[in-house]
Length: 435
Ligand code: ASP
Image 1 (spheres, rainbow, N blue to C red):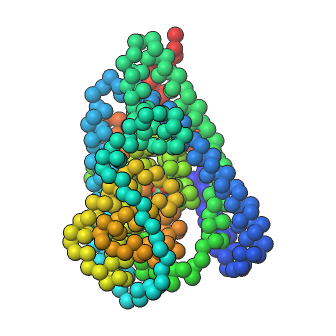
Image 2 (image 1 turned 180 degrees about the vertical axis):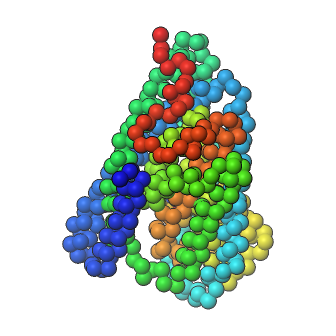
Image 3 (image 1 turned 90 degrees about the vertical axis):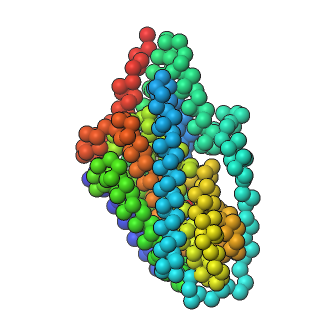
């Protein structure tokens, strides 16, 4: 059985075992919970996430130094960055508009009683635009790496790459070869980890589904289904349409190759933890050149969160309906703007969307306590929206690479391969043999 099939099978088995434990042993004291769900499955799941996260900083840094060193001499960096940012922001704005529109149409919050006593929920201070922009520039690259501050790492790697490409020939060749080889070795590590993925995915899902209290869905069933519907519509429909119209490539092949990455996103609920797998798949299986992928994918994991924006759209409509507040067209425009910008600079980790939702609600003049209404069912939705978030990153990366002539369309059409790990551009990069 190939790896993708094994990962999918692990997902199905994990969910089934988890649901079974939840049904058979409702009490958390039961040995099935203490020994298995909270014990074995949780431990293996945590180790799996830690080992994925471990690779994020080195991979992003090394891969992006390679990409920008190879691009350095060309003048394509600017247009590529503008296209990427433009597509990320546009797709997010489309996503949230779709969510608000469907949220209004379905009205999942109508007929739900306003909660009497709700937990207080504190809003995080929204950083100003100036703070956000200044915060992108690192003063200490080691601190940026230690904190996993992706935007700062991106800036440092880009600058170092450009400097390498402009250095004297011998230095430049030597360093490009060094980073190229390091990149190949880290990708090998990603591949080794992927072979363990079925076990990790199984344990994460079995633990999560054993924990999930289905009773919480109750009143929120319509909210849950509406949100799920918009997420699927955007993740499968809108992305396919965009890919087809902008590149002429087959969405079916794209989705098939992205399946296992989506399962990773779904099981970890973290775009960040999935980043090594996304990057590898986009380069190896979709044929996106390292010069494009190494920039677009880490950037996307941080700033492009369409699934999260969709949740915020549906949640805002839902909360406005429950509280019977009409925020008007300006309120909705404010939501589109804040939700699109709120994700910039927020790392893709589990549950972060709920924190930015509080900011969005404040901007729209809705009670922040509304968050408490939906938080109970958020985990499962977080998993689905993370899968959408990373699919969006991969789609934009493919479109940008295609428009730059840096997409290997033959490789895109090819059947999945499992073993060779070196991205094409690393294999082909000049100066691989230092003298
Ligand atoms: N978990 C999501 C991600 O990592 C972010 C969120 O919506 O909470 O992409």
